[in-house]
Length: 235
Image (tube, rainbow, N blue to C red; front, top):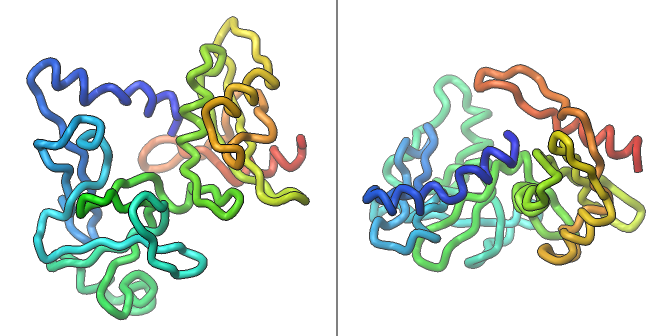
């Protein structure tokens, strides 16, 4: 979805708390259980508002690994989330191939999500793996780039993608300019250099009338593959 929607929800937990309501991030999926983990209710709001949390069962366990090397990763290192525990599915009914691709030999479900261990016995959900950018060997949540660019008042919405270049894979951002605003690409890139690691800074920030979309059961889905094609044609 649009990064603008995510940005508008960023202070929801703080707003709720001022009204006496304590919100907690959580995580679940059909393959592992609807409520697999939840952030501790007594933790500080900055942690509590994040998706993920500590597994609800003391017998459950999570790990994060580099999807290319298979290396298990430590706290703060983004990678592919795998979940174990007593609430895991047995498998996909009638589809042994899909089950073998999803459940590891030692009984973990490959969730298809990007996450990082939080150092407190839990994890932080970052993104779906299909949306992840690999830049300079690092896995990057595109929302981080999108949210940073949307701090500029001229930018109403943003989508970040990765494109191969002779010097390696680089980020490119597409933006929708706010009504009545003027857009300065050089200023937008300079803004990124001030708040993002060098390898996350988009090589181009391209204005577009609207993002290419396709209908889906949950509304319109942005065609990121089409954005990559547009980027390669324009850079």
